[in-house]
Length: 206
Image 1 (tube, rainbow, N blue to C red):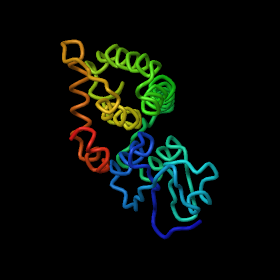
Image 2: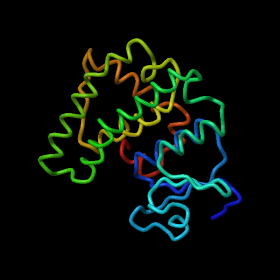
Image 3: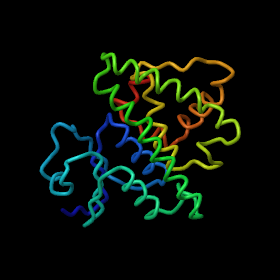
Image 4: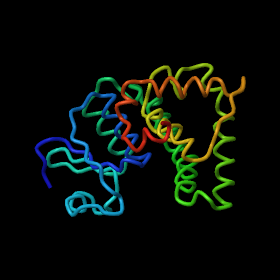
């Protein structure tokens, strides 16, 4: 599969496609974004990605899938602004944060979206909400997630926070949660974040 311009095959509702769109917007990459129904992927995508998953990125002869791989490729291919720290220790720590976010939080979000009305989802909703409130104070020291700069970790976290109304989660406005609320406002107001949103995603907070 070959395309003359970079193309992102993107699920317009998925947090995983959303995080890649944030990276593309942050980097100012010229890219063709094609919204795809994840239940009806095209033969072209299946030729590029044997799993038929989204997002799938095609850059000339190269086809990439798995959002973390795509994000890191884009960060290395377009180095400015950098979205991972320069130094190996800090870079590894950022990758660990992404891994933990995926294991601890993305799985909860996916489960709630898949079956929003089940009793299990109610428990997962409570767990996710309490977990977010518990980490709120990390934003007191630094403006972004464990960092002075906006990074790939924030690109992974932002789509989930944007989807809180869709998940049926409301973070109470208290002194404890104010740093988290300020963080959410800070990332949602970023031009790259606004640019990354699909029409369906905008409707979540319309």
